[in-house]
Image 1 (cartoon, rainbow, N blue to C red):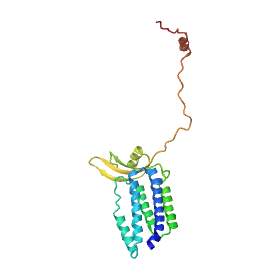
Image 2 (cartoon, helix red, strand yellow; image 1 turned 30 degrees about the horizontal axis):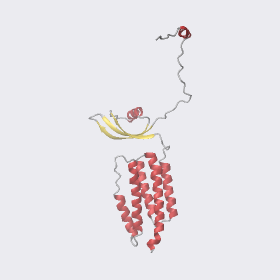
Image 3 (cartoon, helix red, strand yellow; image 1 turned 180 degrees about the horizontal axis):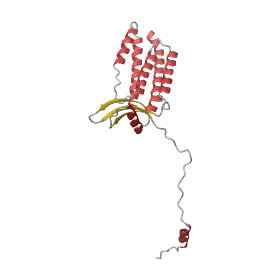
Image 4 (tube, one colour; image 1 turned 90 degrees about the vertical axis):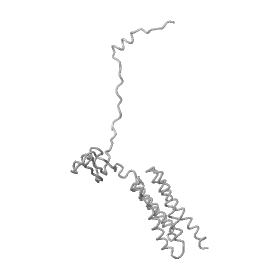
Amino acid sequence: MENLQSLPSLGAHLGLDLAAVTALTFGVFYPRHRRRELVPAYLALNVALFAVVAALARGGTGGGLALGFGLFGVLSIIRLRSDTVQHQEVAYYFTTLVLGLLCGLPGLGLGTAAALAAVLLLVMYAADHPRLYRRDRRALVTLDAVHREPAALRADLADRLGEPLGWTVREVDYVRDLMVVEVRFREPEVREPSGPATRPPRATASPARARTIAARPSRKETV
């Protein structure tokens, strides 16, 4: 009977969780990054963690201990070793994890869980906004020279990419005379011309040539 009475609460928490992770995935992440392959990973991870937390927390006595071991096992098998996973995508991973935790805990009220989920969504929306540091970039550059002085390295990077904000030397090869540098730089701002675009003047025939063309009789073909 107690399990039947908790079904409406479980359904409400599940609906909150699905709404939050859908807003995060399809409202914030995908429109900005267009990583279709990460969408099912975020959704599956969130819903699976919600199911684990909800099941272990409603397991009766010893549920708290089982919940701790279960969460440790779930988090330990997550391996973020994808070839192109960026730091902001890892942040989305952990946000989906926390949303599943918040919404799956039965002892947390629905209003409190909704407020905390809204805070997480607002933080991710603002922290990953495209207008925030929109000209800052990061690149892995292989230079065809080994610079021993930081000033020479800065000048070379500024000439190739723009003014560098910082760099980290990943590899130096004296045999092939090259170095691999991870660069954080800012793209130069492209300024559009302020005045209206002017078209080149249309070529006009000189008056003497115009009179010659006008005086030339037209030919008529006879059949």
